[in-house]
Image: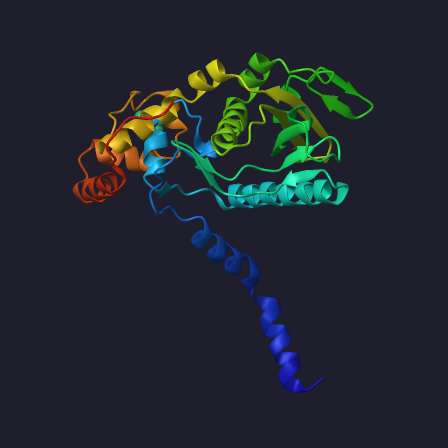
Length: 286
Ligand code: SF4
């Protein structure tokens, strides 16, 4: 080893540069920013206790997440890809991820899978799949009916107790129901399927057999339709909760929401121009 290389090695050992570089990378990755506004409800954001939050998100606001949350979300995306690869290898995928637009909803459902390799496939053999990763704490709160020998199921292949699953994971049920509606509007009348979970901490898997439930969807998606309705009117909803409420305390859009309510002129102008761009005449299909 030459003297110069020895010296370089010593200098690089003195400086902890890697962590700083990773932090700088993630600081940029997780920054709050504005994306193009959406004109359709996104199934993954179709449930929230606050319609104003959904409206701000539809208008393109992407809140700041912590770097750790970002990495967790990225892992969730990879879990999706892994299971989709498994189902593909099993030969049961009949519809891969594909963006679809409906009257009021737009998004990319996970796979549609088939029970039998028949052609044409009978409707009772088609299932819409929604894949989720969840931590042990969330996993324990899921309403498993059987959890024997590592086989976790929401029911013995009969419709899950949707009310119990909705209580544990309203966002996931709303998302599945929204995709089912979106598929139906695009000519794929599925109406049944699975919300499929993998535990992030030990890679156990389990699933709930779910079915179309229009009244439940109306109830769960009410706030997202309200948000879309106000966007189409070109107006911003007021604050449905007091600033000191629990909803506001944990809300990812709090920064934008409170600044608008306090009369931040620059932000107000930004929102006004975005509202103008998404305003549409007519009513919602619902
Ligand atoms: S801060 Fe409160 S009122 Fe504002 S969007 Fe969030 S939950 Fe809704």
